[in-house]
Image (spheres, rainbow, N blue to C red):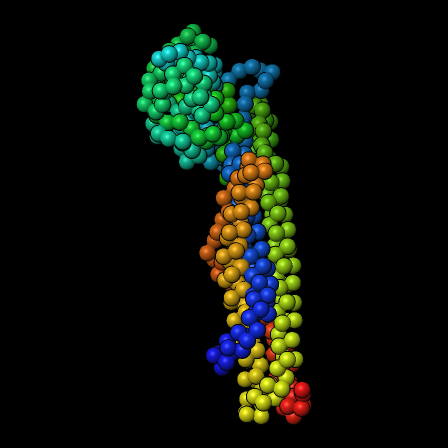
Length: 375
């Protein structure tokens, strides 16, 4: 029966090709849009990683003071707080062979941020140079790179000099602290800071819902300025979910159109083979066997179209990324999930089988005598 069904769909290869293409287009759109939207969601998540579940705490401007160790200890005492990252920034001048430049010297708790530091090269040991800071320094010293020795002076602290070794170079946007980036900074461990007072603390809370309430309590109880990005994070989450729902809707419409193509093809096949169906029944084929032949033909079409759609969908998702980069300069990495490819094949095959069920039922219900009388 399998062989008969396979040979039968190969009779009209042009019709087979068009029907397979219909299923393939629907599945390709599903794969491409899903992988693209998943990659887009991942990029949004990466872009918002500096805000998610975090609160920026600074001294109240009217008081013009620093956060001190007892303030940090009080922040860490909140039950919702998972950790606190301290930061002290000041103007600095970096000198190397051939000249120097002014930069921001940023002292932070690097151990607390180790998993969020992205390096272009080097290691997190030693001083980290922001990508733009390195470009400035290389104007005077083109050979400056990982392993170079620099002298960092801090005018605000009496010109205090700190000899440093360049351990690594940050990627552009490779370190984000709240809304702050360090592309133009020299990043040093907090242990090298010239004072035990800080201009900012980044408070990590246990979940998104804790951001607003904890920020309010910090402002009321500690008299600090506390900024949470709860509303912005929720807005981004809603936006990415809306994108995904829209992509799913477009894919569903495409697959429905493809299913109509399959129904049309199989209905035409039943009409053209009415006499043949009568002969099969006269030879002893049962209603179930006749129905099974047409269902199997639909399954063959579904499998062929789905596999083709997966291949085209993967290529299409990558083409969308290339087009996006060329037009906007913004690129994402499409997420090609093997489980989605398997699901796509199953969905395409199932849709084809369901689409073929109506024509198959009609073929099974044909009266042998009437079918044989058909010309």
